[in-house]
Image (cartoon, rainbow, N blue to C red; front, side, top):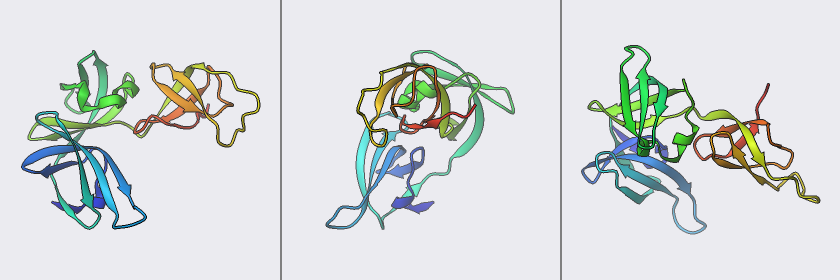
Length: 188
């Protein structure tokens, strides 16, 4: 199915140069001079190699038909992550590299969508946001304005995130799984 390059999003699978590629990142850029384009980071489904490519905004690309199924995260180790199909209770293991840095946001029982092509998993889509607790946060520096300053904090999963100065250790926050950024303080 042909789609416009502007419609590419992370997790999409496309055919390019005779191979299947998963879109890892897609950034729409409008330079001051010249036409707009989409800067895309692609990962080869079969080989795992990465490729950075630019597509003009009017260009079309071939998106591949993918089967999506709901799975539940069970457990993982350094190399593989195991999920369970919610209808058949079948387990499937995928390589940790398939998810990348976002694997740190996986929590026991988390619902995800695994996309597969011809029976082989090609991408794992996590929920857009997760709620995590801050275990360590730098103290507020006197004189900082709350409007534009952020400080580093460590989450319960070991990942680091930049948070506003009023957020302290022990606070539960909402984090965007796509880029690991602070969204808001979690509601109780």
